[in-house]
Length: 283
Image (cartoon, rainbow, N blue to C red; front, top):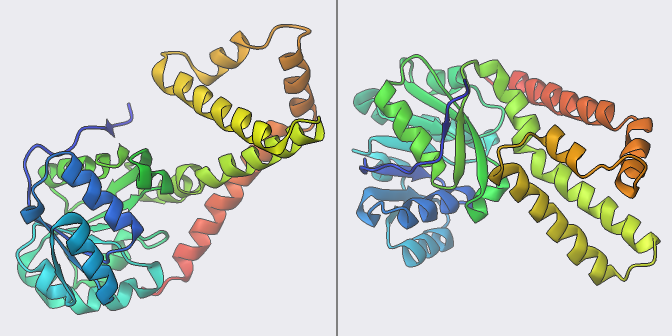
């Protein structure tokens, strides 16, 4: 059974965010909204405007120096771009060796082994793959913890990521590339579908605004049915597909055109690309 977390932390270890971009801001906002004290959250960012915004918007302590923010924190969230992760790890390596915090990475394609090596070895590292709906508190995050992460720390990180949606435990790190392909990249698939759907609606004569409103609300309603009922996607599809009806005509055309295979190939391509990016990152 897949472990899935939707509950925020009930106690508040000090959390330091290294990097104050959109995902860090989403997590900070989610934590505060769920009851974490601002005094339990710190952030470091080299950009003065980012620091000013973080302090103003959230009332948290901010620093320009990574080690100043991280010193004494139980959890470090490395919320930086993959290409600068090695440099950021080097800046806090000595502190990590001295304090042994739980390290949380939200950088795509960077493995726990790479981060562990960059931080000096024997570190508790959790690799997370959130997606952009986390910005609205509706994210889906895959979470892999290496063997050095304690059960308590793993629970804390699962709850941390649940502050912006749901978090799902992944037992095998090699599957994180599939997580990236399915949920990390997934919102773009929905946006692409919406684009094509709206264009098709307009081709049938609907005004652009009407097409957009109808498609977007239909996507929302269908998503709610998937989440709020106990029915599978297959059951819901069959329920609205009457033999010989309009839905049946559309579904039949999609299946004739290889819709299922197209989606399978797309997910496989994204998974493969994630593995390639991980392999190309320096160890």
